[in-house]
Amino acid sequence: MAEKIDMEESKPPNGEAHPDEPMSNGLSGPRHPEPLSQRVIRIMRENMLVILTVAGVIVGVLIGLGVRNVDLTITQKIYIGFPGELLIRLLKMIIIPLVVCSLVSGAASIDPKALGKLGGWAMLFFLVTTLIASSIGVVMAYIITPGAVSVTKPAGLDEEVPAHKEVIDSFLDLIRNILPSNLVSAAFQSYATAYKLVKINGTDGNYTVEKVPIGTDQDGMNILGLVVFAIVFGVALRKLGEEGEILIKFFNSFNEATMVLVSWIMWYAPVGIMFLVAGKIVEMDNVGALFASLGKYIACCMIGHLIHGALVLPLIYFIFTRKNPYTFLWGIFTALATAFGTSSSSATLPLMMKCVEENNGVSKHISRFILPIGATVNMDGAALFQCVAAVFIAQLNETSLNFIQVITILVTATASSVGAAGIPAGGVLTLAIILEAIGLPTSDISLILAVDWLVDRTCTVLNVEGDAFGAGLLQHFVDRNSKKDGVELSEVRLDSDLSPAAPEHSPLIEKKPARDRADDGKSESIM
Image (cartoon, rainbow, N blue to C red; front, side):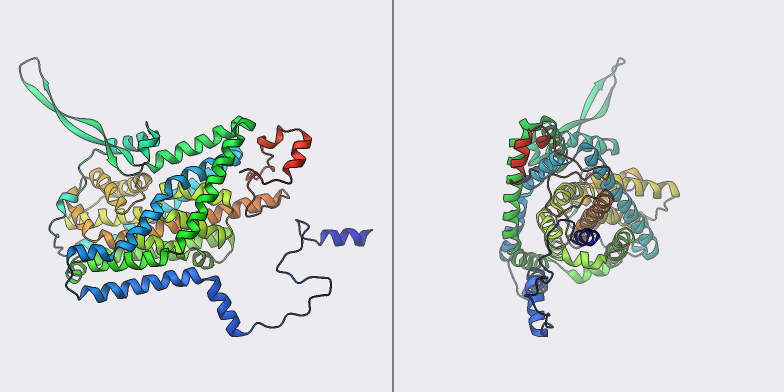
C-alpha cells in the first residue's frame, strides 16, 4: 500500500503525463542527439517571426539610407511609408475592442479581493519603476549636461508647441477623462481645457479681465476613461451572477476573436515596420546639423533608456523571480520592434498580449487585465525623457534648479505620465505641465519636437517593456501564492481565483445545482 501511495504522489499534479516526456511503457527507445542542421532549422522555425521582424528593421534602415540620396518629392516620401501606415491602422483598429473586451472579461472572472490585490501590486510596480526612471533621467541630465552647449532652434516648429495650460487644470482634465460623459465620443475624443478672456465690470466703472477655463474636445482616444469603465462594468457583471453569464460569454468570445485577428496582423508586422522605418529616415532633413546641435540631448535620453531597460527592469525581474530576464525580453522582441516602428504603446498592445502569452507563459487573465492598464498608466520612457528635457531646457536658459524644483520635476513627471496618451509624441504634451510647474518657458519645447521622432521611439520601447515585466512579475506572484495553497495555475485557466488566500469558485457556477455543475465540467470555463 505504501508503494502504491508513493507511485501516486510521484505523478504530475494534474494526473497526466507531460507530452514532452518519453513514454514509460517501453515502446519509446532512447533519444538520439539532434543533428546541428535540424536544430538550427527548428530554432529558426520557432523564432521565424522575430527573425523576420529584425530583418524588417535592418532592411528598412538600409532602404531609407539608400533612398535619401535620391531627389524625391514630398508626395513620393509619403508613398514610401504607406505600407507602414497600413500596419498602424490595422493595430489601432482593434485597440478599442481588445481593451474593452479583455478588461470586462478579466474583471468579471477575478474575485473582487483578488482584483484589488492584483491591481494594487501592478500600480505599485508601475509607480516605483516610473519614479526610478524619472530619477535616472535627472541624474543623466546633470552628468551629461546636454544644455551646456549652444543649440540652434529649428525653424517652423513653434506652432506645434502645446498651448499654455495651468497645472491644476491639467490634473483636473485627467480626472474628467477618467469619468467620460460619453463612451462613444471617448473612442475618438478626450476632454481638454481651453481658455477665454471674460471682461468683468467693476462698481467704480473699471473692469478686469479674467482667464476662464472652458471645456473642449480634442482628437485622440480617451483610453483612460474606457479602461476605468471596462473594469467597473466587468465587476458589475460578476455581481449579477447567472444573469451576467451570457454577457460575459459574449465579451470572452469577442476577446478571443480579436486575438485571432492579432495573430494574422503579426505576420504583416515585419513588412509594415520595414516601411515605417524607411519612411521616417527618408523624411529626415539635415540630420547631421540636427545631431551636432542636439546630439548630447539625444544621447542623454537614449543612454537613460538603455540603463533602465537593459539593467534596472531586468534586475527587478530577476530579484523577484530568479529567472533569466533576457530570455523574457527575447520572447517579446517582436512587440518591442513594433513599438520602435510605430512609436505607439497603444498600437503595440495587441502584439504584446500575444507575445507574453505564447512565448513567456503569462496567463490570459493576467496579460489581458494588466497590459491594457499598463499601456495607459505606465510610462517609464516618457517620464525619463520628460525629466531629461526639463533639466535640458533649464540648462539652456542658464537657470539653476534647487532641490525643491528637482523634486517637483520627479513628482510631476511621474504623475503626468499617467495621463500621457499612448500615441506618438504623447509625452511632449505633458512636458508643458512640468515646465509650467518649475517656471520654465514652454516655447523651448520646439527643440524637443525637432528630435522627438527618434527619442519617442526608444521611449515607447521602454514603456511596453515595463508593461511586459509587470505582467511577468504578477504571473510569478500568482503562481507562488497558488502553490502555497495547493492550487495549480494553468496558462489558460479562466475561472479560478487569483487570490493567494483561497481558490475561488465562480459565483456563476456556485449558484447552479449539482447536476448543472457536473455538466459544466465537460464544457468550457467562463472567463
